[in-house]
Image (cartoon, rainbow, N blue to C red; front, side, top):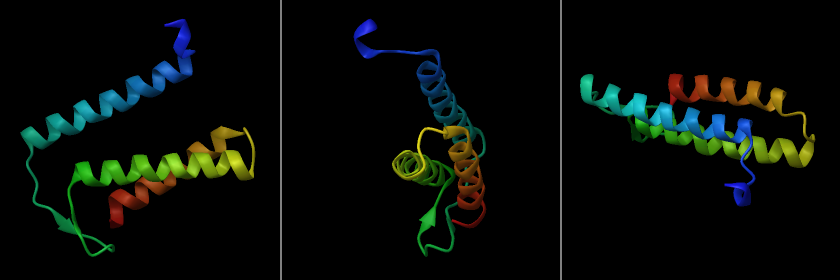
Length: 90
């Protein structure tokens, strides 16, 4: 897999994403939920909010790289605050 330039941080990132998807799948099977209406005005489930969080976090990290530079641990903090807000109010 040398052609993909895998590093441990990259591998851990994809392992984390896969484990979150697996966890949310198990939660959806064990504890079905009804969609709720948040501040966006659309009905969302846990999976929808996870997708919105992942997509928004990608944009936050890209914007951080473009505007601030490579000091990504602070971007992770912003992403965590964003994730809490999405799961709370969306």
